[in-house]
Image (cartoon, rainbow, N blue to C red; front, side, top):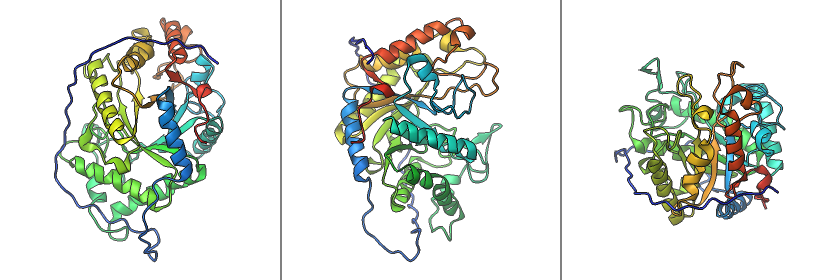
Amino acid sequence: MKIKLLVAMLMVVSLTFGSCGDDKETEKPDIENPDPDDNDDSPLIKRNQATETFYANLKKFATQKIMFGMANPTTLGYKNGPKNNNINQSDCKDITGSHPAFYESDFMWYTDKKFKEWDIDAMKQAHQRGAVIGYCWHMRGRESDDFYAKKDGAFTQDRYLVNAILAGGTRKTNPALNWYFTQLDEIVIPVFKELGFPILFRPFHEMNGGWFWWGSHSDAYPADRYKKLYQLTVDYLRKNEVTNILYVWSPDSDAAFDFYPGDDYVDVLGLDIYEPGIASWNPTSKYLNSMKALTEHAEKHDKLVAVTETGLRKDNNTFRYPEVYPDFWTKYVLQPLIENSNINRIAYIMSWYNADWNNDDKGTFYIPYSGVEQKHTKGADAVLDFRSFYNNINTAFEDDLPDLYK
């Protein structure tokens, strides 16, 4: 067992919170039954019993510890190359002695068949060790083959893709709807059914930003259409008997409830926030106010909260982490949360992935890796800070987890 130190301080933060969007109504498209001859209108099962048990255990554990998570910790990394199948190794384990408690992969990677094989195997092994597993999806558009709304400063052909999907009709009469359901049929559903165990799924993240085709860019569509796309997705998965999923909703930087698809469709309320307390657009007060707003909703509606993405990115060619802020994880991410008694029910905090894509030591990393001390002046300080984050009594890594599945 590791020895952890309790950090206890008091902090008073004023609440300033706003949201955007409008109330324009749109018709929800018909969801064609996968079997046209099946007219069963019986209620959809939201979660199977194993997933209900897991969810209850996760809620209980969140009152005790905050899990540390990372995107693809054992299949993407700095030390062994951007993509690798050394799935017993992770940058996190090299530094702390333990893998993260939460692993999130991305269906975007699964166009690479070899990597998909490695990654699914990694997910299975992590689950066997007791870790929590999740997926997000940087889904590429139908025409642009890109998840961004713009390319070279101009909107792509998929600017109005959400509108097309939601235009009404069925798979037979709406090509965009058929395309979308086919993506779910071929990419998502088989993986969820193969794994079988409880999984956290975080579709269409950062919707209140304008950078993704499903986001709030320009005048393409208001918040209500995003909500209908999210609901359509969850309903379709449930209709296809995918009942091992907890759904995660994660706006960018603000608790943008104008985009909230409803309690029937969300189990974890998340926040993607980079450079909290460092970037001028993400001051600590904004970080805390957003997390407090999510907590208030979670407490009233029996949900969980998470920091679904965070990290400190490079500023052009300057590695702000670790050279300027080696204490990022303790001082800027964890400490503000544990010092604020109004923020709780936090299931996890997740770092984005480490990857040196060109093997030239210029790629971005979000946590220290083995050998960072030789590459960066403040690398050793970052290692010490991340180990302090690991040793904190409030955090949990894989080696801290109880059996959350029983």
